[in-house]
Length: 202
Image (cartoon, rainbow, N blue to C red; front, top):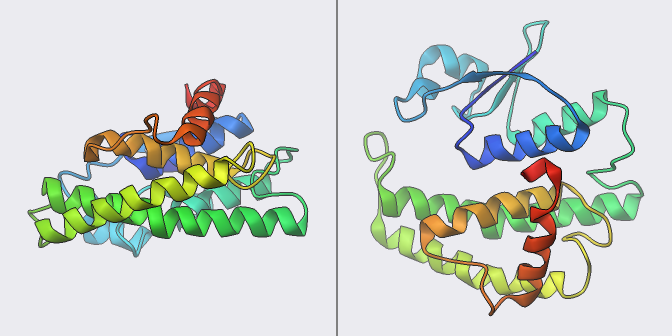
């Protein structure tokens, strides 16, 4: 199998950290997203969303969407990591925080970056006002995440999960938007320092 990706992107980073947690090595193939390689008809046949990463299986099957790829690897790899939770309650809490992080954190971050930087202005209409609004929504979400981390060790509870990987990738995006995990977010700061010690993110 092989991952079609661009290692500089947050979505590829999320899969890479997940694989590191499982101790897996997978062949990689670079995709030039600035050159719109992921928007070609050939690529779109593999990934109807036109996004990376995409996992190519040996039987010719393609899987896109980073969390779907992580779920696949988790399912085929015997492990005791429980990165999607172990009990029904844990699984529900991980899914809950995954959705919260995606909808209130990752999506606004992406929208802010794309519309403010104009990185993809050659293929989409960039609206600065929407970028500013998205940035503001992200800034308002960070205290919500900080409050959650004031209640428990990890994002979804007392266990490390994919929700922490998603939050880490999100925090790595903040500097591009002139946001930071600063002293106003003490619980997020504590968690960030804790995350930075994990071999999978180093």
